[in-house]
Image (spheres, rainbow, N blue to C red):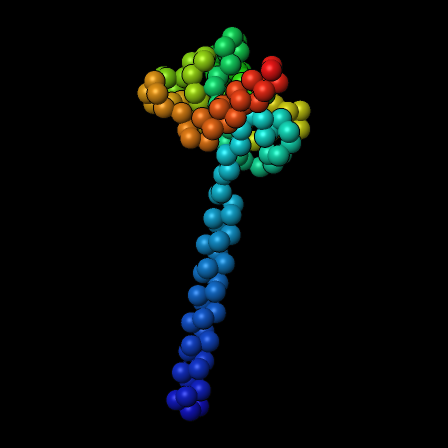
Length: 148
């Protein structure tokens, strides 16, 4: 085999390995990608059913209910326009409370109940994820427009 053919074969093999590695990385990235949705988007059917995503908003006042097992908690996340019921099994963050900002990650069931696998609470009294703050602002503007 000529040196030129060997070089060409080596380059072709390297390109094939590189393409394979990129394909594996992109596949792993796609599987672990988690999108953020507002309660309004979820209620309008814009969120994927059966695929993990995040919902951000405020924990609705009076919505926290703890099950008898002491581990399961049900509550609602709202952006002041729409409310999404959430079920979570596990310990909640210390800062989690009614009327405070939270982001939940999990999947939406066919019944509209969000099954959370992770609950994140705001870390200080002024923090809210930018997407959640934008959603709350938009919902409040829409509510004011409807009232007028």
